[in-house]
Length: 67
Ligand SMILES: [Zn+2]
Image (tube, rainbow, N blue to C red; front, side, top):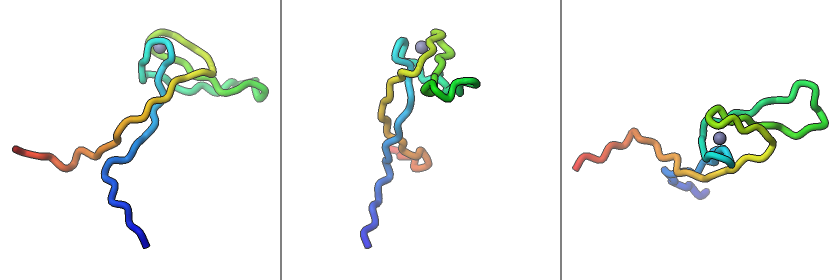
């Protein structure tokens, strides 16, 4: 059995393709099962199905390095 001891895991976060804000949330179209999911940016007001995704390191900050 192989145990991966990756403390850093990559997580993908959704960002606004217009302003790059992470303050974006998914809105489910109420009447639109034909439509793709839409996202709305709370910062610039962008709304649409296209978002950007970035990968960030999700390192837990419980390990504090004190020099
Ligand atoms: Zn935006």
